[in-house]
Image (cartoon, rainbow, N blue to C red; front, side, top):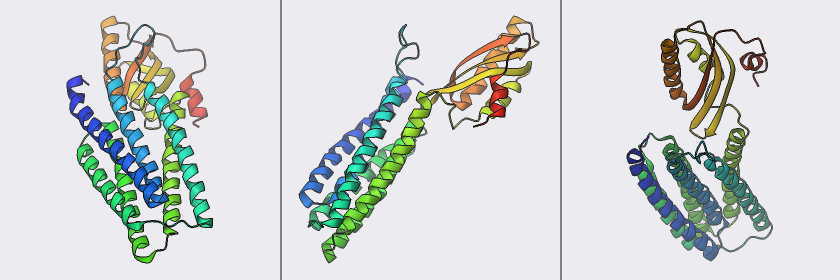
Length: 298
């Protein structure tokens, strides 16, 4: 994808990041002034959105990075490392919020419902503006960021409801209850991100790609007899890598090259953008990774 194609999405992401960062600051200050832990918790949710947006932006920028002799794949893996660190931080922040909510259950704190409601409404407006910016993109990173912000929009609606309840009833226990709910949601999101980043760092096969389907796709190419020693892993969230041995009785060099190009083209629909194909004239005598996977699918 060219820089020209990326440019509109990058600009929209930058504006979304600016709006999110500004409101994150507003929400933290509003939470401290009003005494609302739910606002601070929602700020934690907003932080997860900000990190998601930043990761999406970084992924787009790194996609255009130039490989060097020392960084032969460029800087794509930086996205995964940053995602891992961010997920750990989100779990820690959520843990602190849940602990503080527990303390407030034991000793309720007065909350200024008016300030809480005003800040939450501003947050809802900010989220709706970001949704407007991100909606309609077919880019995987943009769609992921859109879903994060959509979740935070629902969280803002819940905080507004809690603020209305506190303003009219004076009952403040709804605040720590909502804080725990938001904290658990953030932890769930962070744990999912941790699992994904760890799987990529350990070079597991991507969950979004069927191992058997890839094998069948290669075998369906005319002239291919079998596939051996197939390895499939992810470079980053949307770029996968494959290397395999292809057994074929074809001897013509030009025909083998055509087969190779057809295989590479077919693999692109699985986001396999880097592939190494070793053609063999004889069946491998060593144990095939493909057969091992069939015997141990997990």
